[in-house]
Length: 122
Image 1 (cartoon, rainbow, N blue to C red):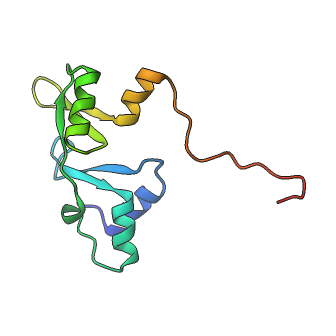
Image 2: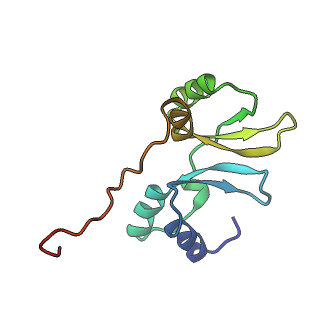
């Protein structure tokens, strides 16, 4: 959380993701999850950006947890992202609801339709 507001906004604007873990001091110390939409609303309202205030709770699961149980944790906590830790509490990665759904049903295409040029040139 030592990055400047401009650096944070630039990183988020250039990222394909919509949720970002917020860390304090080290990569292992996650204090919450910020949604790019919340950050955009705050920026547009010209309020000071405080990532701690915008952060939603981060939920941690062990890397040994089954996908079906992880899905239950996502639903129970009304969240879209879980942080995965090893047996020593070390951060191993993150898991989203899309990751689980893609394991069940296969690759999910992006919601953005591909741009195509019409015959009239538009």
